Amino acid sequence: MCRNIKTLRPPVTPDAGAEDFRAAALQYVRKVSGFRAPAAHNREAFDRAVDAVTEATARLLAELEVRGAPARAAEATA
Picture: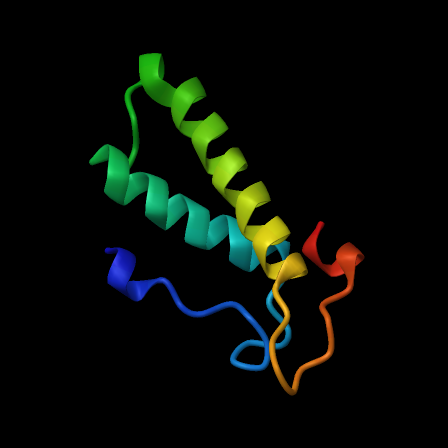
């Protein structure tokens, strides 16, 4: 499943935003946890993990310096 997560950094995907970050995070957490849709008693932990990975992805892409591409604006990652 993680093989299908696309590269989100510019210039590969210059218009990636919060929705793309969340979709990638959801794929990652699904793969790591082994749950496509967690049971009700695991939902809160699953959702917190997706949120944390989404935030980490946005932070990473905001801080990366890619040669030949302008820095990504902080508001684009929120």
